[in-house]
Length: 79
Image 1 (cartoon, one colour):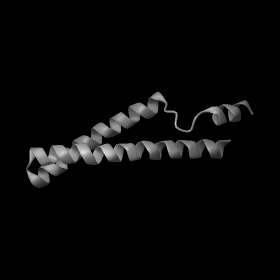
Image 2 (cartoon, helix red, strand yellow; image 1 turned 90 degrees about the horizontal axis):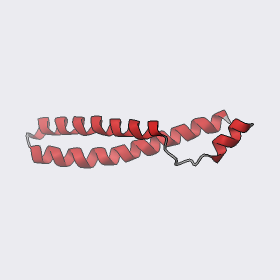
Image 3 (cartoon, helix red, strand yellow; image 1 turned 120 degrees about the vertical axis):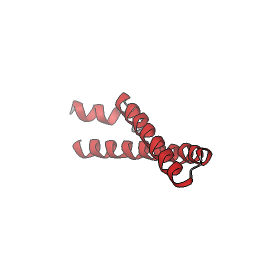
């Protein structure tokens, strides 16, 4: 019962250090892949830099929201 109360008391948007580190790691990998693929396709450092900053940034935010939703879903099923 105490575990259920603890889980319910935790904010659904509160980030754990692991969540933040995992998100930063994902962002770094995504930026690198986006730059490499875009540069390989266009040969332009300028275009590759632009694409690798915009698309992964938006995708990283989406990933964080997705990860939190799955974490909260798992907690709801456990309690």
